[in-house]
Length: 83
Image 1 (spheres, rainbow, N blue to C red):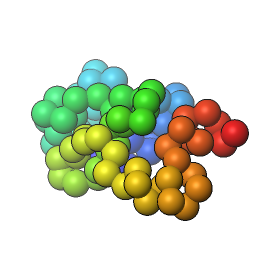
Image 2 (spheres, helix red, strand yellow):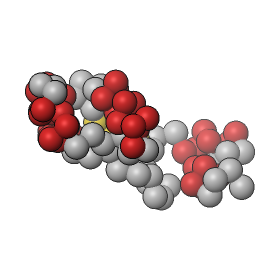
Image 3 (cartoon, rainbow, N blue to C red):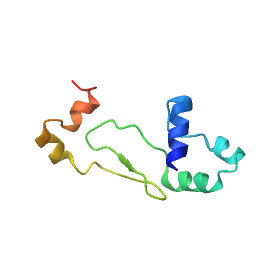
């Protein structure tokens, strides 16, 4: 799954490989997991989502935001491009 995300990101800038691409290459297990998990959505707010690379992958809201704030790097720091 991680290799699929990484390969797609390298090829296109989007970690979500098209389902047709996965099907033609016979990546049936990956295709099934992608359908079960859904697309890897871009982070747009402090709510996330974060993608966990389990099998199959899961997505949840950010969990360590208090620690990030304490370190002086709240999630907004990253959402705003490190400003």
